[in-house]
Image (cartoon, rainbow, N blue to C red; front, top):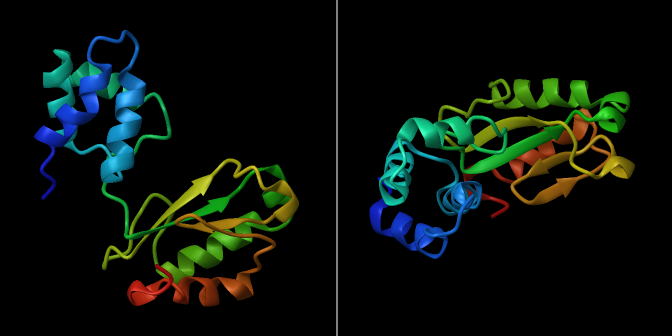
Amino acid sequence: MIKTKSEIEKIVGPFKDKKGALISILQHVQSKFGYLSEVAISDIANELKLSENEIYGVATFYSQFKFNKPGKHQVKVCLGTACHVRGGHDLMGTVERQLDIKHGEKTKDSQFSLERVACMGCCALAPVMVVDKDIYGKTSSTKVKQILNKYKNDGGK
């Protein structure tokens, strides 16, 4: 269980009197905890004297914010134009089969979560897969199992 109240107070503190700081606060909280939990949203609302609905209204507008705890290792597959043309959808299908999940889900053991991304900004390396902060360019479906195995059972990190 995340002890958020005092940690949220520390994050909100420097922004408390700044107008329009909610997005920055949400980014900091997500960076700290990996997602925006119901408890964190409630604590932010209390600190800023806003309703939880106002917080959710802003946070749900932006796709960067997550409301479910991610897996230990976050896998992202780029489906931008360059990656799409060079097999990004096949790559996504292979990752989904290897992990036995669809994008937006996490594995039963919470080791991996999977996201599709519109563009990673690595078009010259297409197709691209990212695990945590490690970028794998020119990735083929045959390389997926080898890459994912590096992170299983606390490997890779």
